[in-house]
Image 1 (cartoon, rainbow, N blue to C red):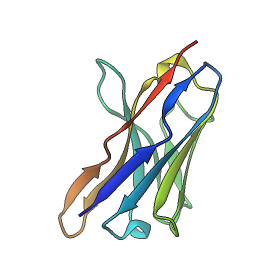
Image 2: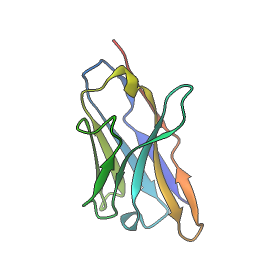
Image 3: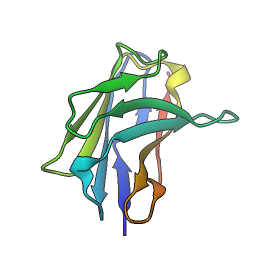
Length: 119
């Protein structure tokens, strides 16, 4: 069964940094695009960053461009997100995601990790 397990969230002051990790299992990790989403209270879930299967292409939401960096280690079946210059508006639950996984042809999500940016 597919599993995505996030870690690395926590409480950080504005301007601080955190590194999120997502350990994946149960599917051919190195052949899939991986995504990080976030959902703040009373807001819709939004796509934050994506990385290609080989890690040679990335995309970011405008709100995090230049501050967040997504990366992956296919040998460890893990995707990361380095978050720098954090702002209070980055406060959210962050989710790891993979879409349309064979043979189930469905999307999978991790349980989420809370990131709180506050002084």
